Amino acid sequence: MDRAELTTEQVLKRDIPWEHYMSTKLISGTCLQLLRRYDHKPESQRAPLLEEDGPAYVRVFLNILWSISKEETVEYVLALIDEMLATNPKRAALFYDQSLSGEDIYEPFLRLLWKGNWFVQEKSCKILTAIISARPKLRNGTLPNGDASNSKSKLTSTHDVLRGLVNWLCSQLRNPTHPSCSIPTSIHCLSTSLREPYVRTLFVQADGIKLLIPLISPAATQQSIQLLYETCLCIWLLSFYDAAVDYLSTTRVMPRLVEVVKGSTKEKGAFAAQMIDLGLPQIVQNLKAQAWTDEDLLDALNQLEVGLKENLKKLSSFDKYKQQVLLGHLDWSPMHKDPSFWRENINNFEENDFQILRVLMTIIDTSSDTTALAVACYDLSQFLQYHPSGRIVVADLKAKDRVMKLMNHENTEVQKNALLCVQRLFLGAKYASFLRA
Picture 1: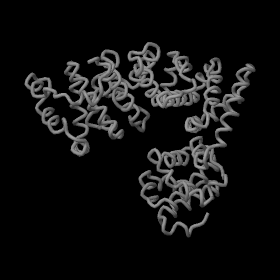
Picture 2: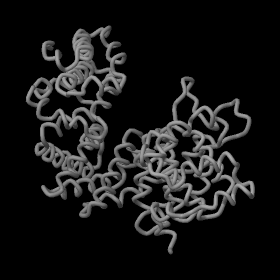
Picture 3: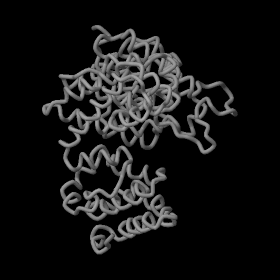
Picture 4: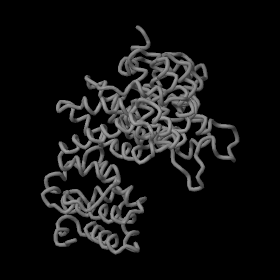
């Protein structure tokens, strides 16, 4: 079989000779015991093992990738790790357990990006993107694994990993290893990695922006719509970097976006909503605010703005609310205090693991806009009133202490709504309706 067409399911059906590897001292007896408990077991049995001994399994997987070069075994272990992370993305944090502080958790995957077949490259890219995105930032601003000055051996630094990853992603966009998978995989990983300011810098330095432009065109199939969506997400993330904005202004990205918006007919309205979710209106506003002398560019920006406004009119009240929150542009528009809005849309707040609530908490933590802070606190209090599990959900977000800080805010409107939110958090939905803003 062509190894480029291998699937995870096919690979995980293999029987790997772990006992032979132990007898030849490629793995230890402890490794063998852990693997016997884990290998070919259902998720219901694996989950408790990872809960109890997750870092130990990460060490086992890393040691195998270090010690064994047989292609079938490397593919198998990568498939195990990918499946582990796909089932529960939070498991990426296992790689940063204190017990693994001396392990170079990045190097095996970085090395396999360039040396393996497509299956190996794709899994290594996905795993590397997942674990580096999950890395904790330490209080002193340093990062784990290779960046600490007291490390006995030189581990792969975070900057080295990001540089290697960006180089590989750009190489796949230029010369795809796989005819149909390289570009979607690369764009998917880029749409996560570009959240890092340093990756934006590296991507611009690698002349990567021009590789995105051809991908912005009206889409027909679901796969091409997903690729277009993630490419636009990359453009949006790059718009936070001045050098990228300067470069974008010299390309045909705006006319292409105009064509995409024009192509977002009623049948493709979901994509128009996604573009608005991405904050494309804000990108357009930011670009229009700059003094461009290029009349064609200004005309393209104006057309794009008109198209987005027309699509925004077609969105439901919750879509408009979501747009406000994701852009961080909260104001006292009528929907916030409309009981019917909350009753009809309260279940929509559960989308994407309560994404809207998480963004509201980010606004509460970081915004300097007093209106946005007051509205965010009020909306959180509304969620507490109308959602049957509101207190549990909000408690999981560790919202209490974060909102309580605003009770001492210098702005009285912020104080008032922070107090209302905290009161509803303590009282719960049963009594929350007695508290009025």
